[in-house]
Length: 222
Image (cartoon, rainbow, N blue to C red):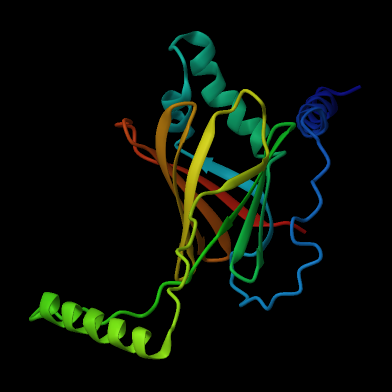
């Protein structure tokens, strides 16, 4: 058995071992029976993780303590995730569902969105115009008995997650960009999800971190 073949076999076993040791079946679609009309956008669908930029910032922000093990995780964890993580974005009407796995653990969340209206920003007399408009709308509503539109609940509802994961977040949708503000195990973070040149990018930054943001970059799942 040649040395080259042994190296090839070892590399193949490492890659396949990382894939199958972290495998868990993809949960069923949250909106499998959706009948509401949906405006298609580039974010929707199933994606697989291709690469991670600056994972050290993500690892450092969530680490309970520093040390050799934490440093080692910053190099090993991305290698494993890049061969196992899937991300799915579904939409049904004004509802969005996000599904992602962390090794064998799946996180499934659902939230309500409202596409931002096109706004004309007039600098001069902005306050006066807004007050006049509000008064006019109040008069119209009183005359026509129009009820107030219910306020959108931006909170993400976590359908599935690990028991030891304390995760709270709010979701907004602007243009074709999802924004999530929340906390994980007491650490506040901001996440942007957007489409860029055929790839899905999740840009995550922690409030108290001085190491910058971490980019999880996905490609379409075959």
